[in-house]
Length: 287
Image (tube, rainbow, N blue to C red):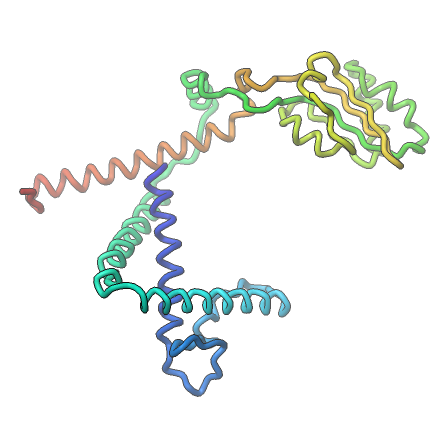
């Protein structure tokens, strides 16, 4: 959704610019003590009352205020330098400001238009169809696993029993493992129905596995220890980098793509409708 993203960036830039311009030009309150001054530009507390989120502590508010004042000073110093070194022609930014303003107005209207009309429900059939029609675009750039992960203290009474059970795929053994691990393990995650990047799982280990992809091609269990803990991993399933990414791993991404396409279609249809209506009613001419 390139157009909306661009306008969003323009929107943020304009809001920041207008805030700073307002603070630079607000000199009508000499009774107030300024927070900062750069040459003949003053920054007052009344200029920045809207920068503090609700519920902030006094300490956090002071940090935000100091950061804002510092940024304001830096901005005005650079502004002064620019004003002194640019020609009058170069300093004429009226057209650019008008472009920002017009883009901001269009962006705000389009966002309101989308908010009122966008259907965000995405069916399983739509997801499956998109996945099937674009299968070549879903290639893994990292290895995924479904796994069981246990971290427990080495002096845990049931550590040997857990080591006997964690590699089993039998339902009875898995239930027994659940009961034991939930009671005594420091951490117990069973990703049997969820793909996750192996790199994410590795962050739970006390040290990394060198050549992890080669390791996973030949082994399905990992046992590690550090000073106080044992780490047990049973890899249930693996999909390697370069293979086609499984549908269930891409569902959230596909939903986002479908909804973004709907947004773009709404905007395109709106622009075409406005254009055609103006054309039929002779509201514009091109020469």
